[in-house]
Image (tube, rainbow over all chains, first blue to last red):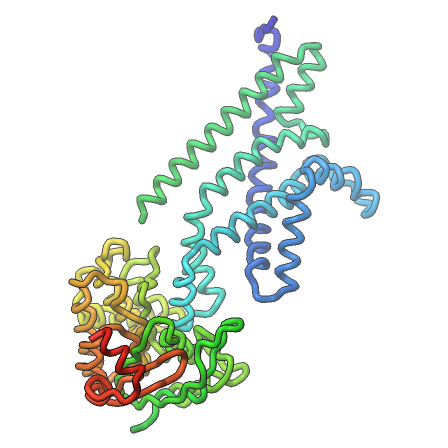
Length: 218
Length: 243
C-alpha cells in the first residue's frame, strides 16, 4: 500500500533537486531566448540563405526527440571533440538549443502577427530597420508571444526531468535514487510528480498575473 | 512652378497584374493634387510608389531633386522628407500620442528630446489635440487618431505630404475634423498628394486633379475642368456615379 511515512526522511533530499532543476531551466530559458531572437531574425530577413539556415535549425531541433539531442551532446560529442562535458553542461547546451528552436518559432509568429501597417508607418518615417524592429515591432510582438513563452517555460520545467538521464541530481533523479535505496518506487515518484505539478502551477499563476498586468498597460 | 515631385513613365506590376501602366506627372512646390478614380484604378499604388513603399517595376520617381528609383538610393533618407498618412492611421499603439510624435524626430533626425517635444507640442496645438498628448492611441476616436497621424508625419518637417484615403476609415461625423486640418495644411503651402473619395474636398482644396483608371492617367486638370467639363468618357461615367 502507499505509505509516505516510509520516505519522510528522504523528502528534503528530493526537494534539494529543485534548485538544481531551476539552474538548468533558468539558464536554458535565457540562452534559449537569445538563440530564439537570433534565429527568428534569420527567418524574417530578405536573404534566402539566412532564412534557410533559420528554418533548418528549427526543423532539426523540433524534428528529433530532446532526449536524443541530450544524449548526442553528452555521450556522442566527446567522441568528436575529445572534450567531456558534465551532465549539467550537456543539459544546459541541449535545453538551450532546443528551446531556442521553439522560441524562435514563437517570436517569428509574434512578429509576423504585428500589423503590416506598423512596418509601413515606420518605413514612411525613415526609421532604420533595426530600430523599427526594436522599438516598434518587438514591443508589440512581445504582447502576443508572452503566453506562448510562458508555455515554453512550463514545458522546459517538465522536460528538465530528462537531465536525470545524464546523471544530474534533479528532482526526478533523486526520486529514483530514493526508490533504489528503499526498494520503494511508488511513493518517491509520486512525490516527485507532486513537486513538478506545484512548480508548473506556480509558473502558470505568474504567467496569468503578468498577462493581466500587460493587458492593463494598454 | 518649381517641381517637387516628378514621376516619369511609372510602371508597377504585382506578379502578372499590371497596376500602373506608364504614369507621368509633375507636382509643383506648394501644389495640392487630388488623385481620384474607381477602386482598383491604381491610385493608392501610385501614391505608395512616390515614397517607394511599393517598388516600381519601371520608370523614375524624383522628390525634391532626389531620385528614389536609382539603384542603391538611400530611400530611408529620402523618406524623412516625405510624410505619409494612411487610411488605417498606423499609429504606434504602445506609445503615447507625444511619443508617437517625437520618436522619429529623435531617432531619425537626431533632435534632442527637448526640441522634439517642443515641436510636437506646437503640432498637437495645430491639430487641436494638445490635451491628448499623454493618451494612448486606443483612447482616441478615429478622427483624433488621424489628426495625430498627420501631426506625426509633420513632426519630420517634410517637404511633401502623401495622403492615402485619409478619411475612408472614419465615421462620417469625423471626416470634417480631418479635412479641416488638411485644408489648413494646404493653405500653409505644403506640397500635398491626396488619394481621396471626398470629391467635395478635392474640388475645394486641390489645385489639380488626376483621374486614374486601370493604371492609366486618363485625365488631369483643374478641379473645374475635371469635375465640370470632363473630356473622357471614363471620367464622365465615374463622376456621374460619385457626384
